[in-house]
Image 1: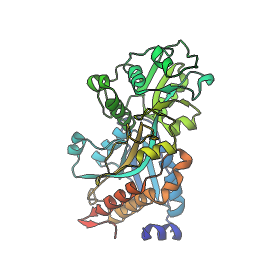
Image 2: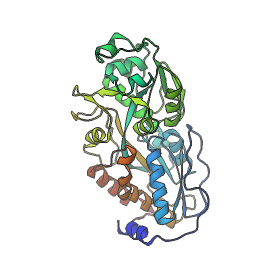
Image 3: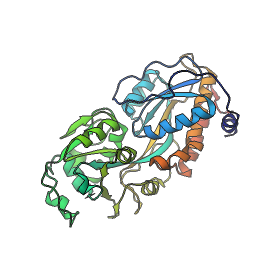
Image 4: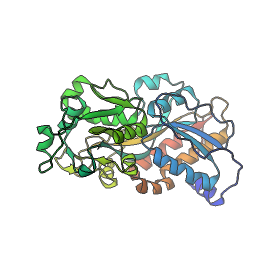
Length: 362
């Protein structure tokens, strides 16, 4: 987009104050009121892409002096803040459902921003780091409370040659409304009939067993502190915290290590025009089965709550940059760059955003 590139090259200096971005843990708490200056954007939501978003917003600030205050409060919190219009944009790892859509005062759009892996991270000590393989049936059995020991025969059967410890399986799950939970439970709902019948899928579910923690950050911390723990977190959190995570047997019967390559394989699919798609339980033989997209959410009509056309324009330019130039920061932080198909869908959606009925992008 020429406007964004010229803005980046010019490096237009605008005075700003305060911190460049704000992150935190939490669930459905509010991110705070919208900043009054047109050179500050407020965002809140998914913790899944937070390491990548923090890098993107930092680099964009260096180039344009636009400040982005983003709070990593979970997808549920981001959707609530967007609904309450206390932020300029929300972020979610799950598309809005019917109830959430109906709670909005006006239609919102979903722009794919990144793709990543939800991994099963565990704490069995250094001797077992990255050695464990899990199957769909075993994962469901553990999170249903049916498999309660690490040396259970069902785990041993797919980990031949590994001397599994005879310690209790301690489940850690999200306590807040979470798109990461939506990705994980959607996967389980697809691959296990018992899970489908007893628990189902969603950003918040009634967990049969386990301890809840807020945010990917909170779950990662609980796993690190608990011997025998297993929980689901974004790949970047596991790598940054030097945590063990399992390989998973996918739909094709292949043992897959979560990585940029295996997530990219899972994401190489057709993306519908509205941007909403699930990557879980992929048909790709080399695809990681617990992968997911993460979206930026904005109101399709931007003239509300005395918002200026300038602020709307700056936000759309930021999101365009995130889905184009900003993708260069994905791989180093263990996120999969958007596929050309996802980028094309995002472009069309961004071009549909209006201010007073006219396209924001000129």
